[in-house]
Length: 123
Image (cartoon, rainbow, N blue to C red; front, side, top):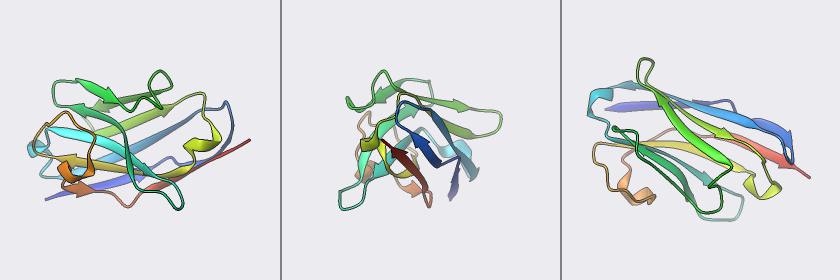
């Protein structure tokens, strides 16, 4: 089992930056892929960014060039640096992990989930 705990959400004005973090614990040696998803009010959850154990990354086109996913292996922590934030980035952001790398930002392929951290971007 893997436990994921997000932190770092908050409120920011459009154009600003935030970094959210996800601390992983438990059977972390089994993790091959990790990712960030978000769910805005009234909308379905969508993939934002993913990273595998070799450091390969993928991004949703809506955030490419603005968001950067990274991880610290020593602390088993996943990060999402969000720059040039827009009001449409407002959502609950979830960290997810799985034992297989599929190269697809689809929640169906992630087994472990955190509780989420809220990000609000005001215009």
